[in-house]
Length: 142
Image 1 (cartoon, rainbow, N blue to C red):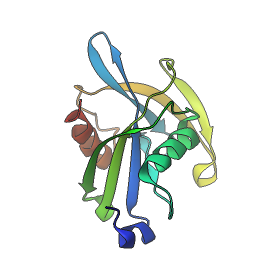
Image 2: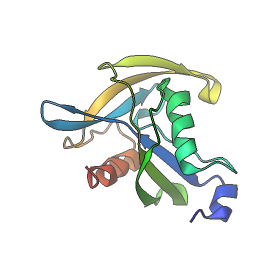
Image 3: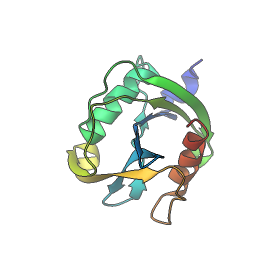
């Protein structure tokens, strides 16, 4: 059930998770933000928007990638960071290349550099702590 108070406070977040298998290991899509380091695609669930629809929208806005079919719910997670509630959805896409750049209009416009992160690999210090914790949560479901 969606917490309507947190929705109005913009504290409900969605994280669309795109994965692939490479050399027997699961990798998830991530990007390097020019001002904020390595991250996962994540955004705010808007009022009157379902979390799965938000996952589709956020993935497209931040990466240019289109979801095929309905996103599959992975888990709900309380991020201590700013008292946020995150909803993780596994999203299927066309086969994606190893890396690319995407221009997004977020925060006045940025080029995001996309790459694949091995789930078994510990995130380095270039990752914001909330995304390090998010990766650990995602890994529980693969």
